Length: 126
Image 1 (cartoon, rainbow, N blue to C red):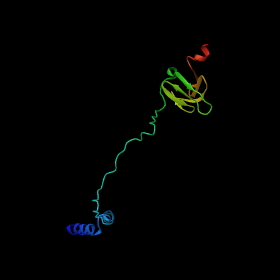
Image 2 (image 1 turned 30 degrees about the vertical axis):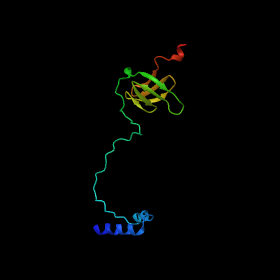
Image 3 (image 1 turned 90 degrees about the vertical axis):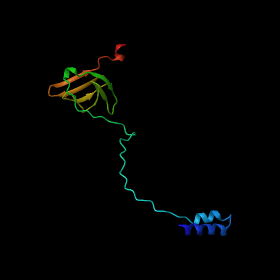
Image 4 (image 1 turned 60 degrees about the horizontal axis):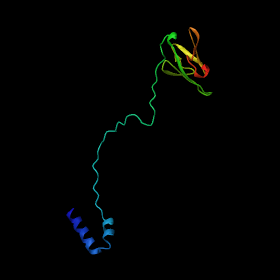
């Protein structure tokens, strides 16, 4: 190591001040980095992917099902029944959602067809 430093100083003094940068760039001493075996990091959940919670079908009796809201559009209407968002084909209270209209949801199951209506429709009160 001392010999390498002596050679470097000799080259720098011989080459002059103008070429000192060139000599420094052409001579370099690199030590090998020690090998490390690091454990992979546990990152957790991706903050850019929304968290989706899937709940099973509701076991509420039919008389306790309450239609809270309807979000109607032609492609995929949805509704809120007992604080749970449902779509056509979802299960609720042992019943399958077969239709979602602008003011109602129709469920069908072993007990037959059940129609849930919105309790208060502001547009119809006028």
